[in-house]
Length: 200
Image 1 (cartoon, helix red, strand yellow):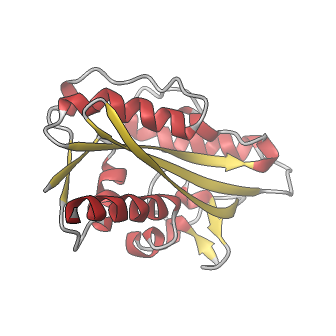
Image 2 (image 1 turned 30 degrees about the vertical axis):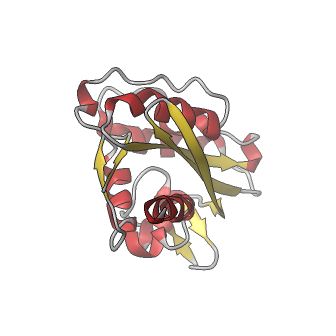
Image 3 (image 1 turned 135 degrees about the horizontal axis):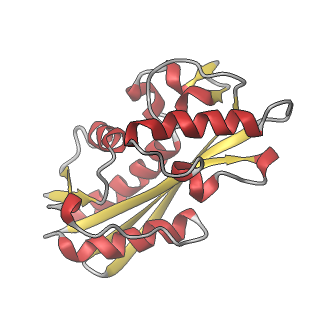
């Protein structure tokens, strides 16, 4: 069985494939997703955006489709960047510049701020064509560092300090991060649901 994911983000794809190792299904991008019109993320919550994307791409795949929306919520910034995490610093001229620009802006916004508690949030929506089957949420608590650490991961990982590990997500392997991360938690809930569906 193949389950399709509505993303072209290489970092997310790596985590999806890693998380699905040993599962009774495989994960592939929605066929031709690069040529499909993108769904604008107009929702005010991670749940709303995940559902919008899943229902948008669902009819374009010959099977179940899941879409995720995720980001970083910083308490000192009133929950920002939140659903705008990927575009916090605007749309850069080159895709590879986005993470660096977002991290720079986050550090600027938090300059001199002592309370730096934050959390990563991920919501995954599962669809069968244009029908929503469910949503799955994962959260991991931590804090924002004053400077990046490590070169692993993607997005805000080098700035996100996870206390139980005593280091930033940018300093750990993908396997170790996935064991506790917001996306890992949401994916395990999704996979449990998919496995139950396969057994019916």
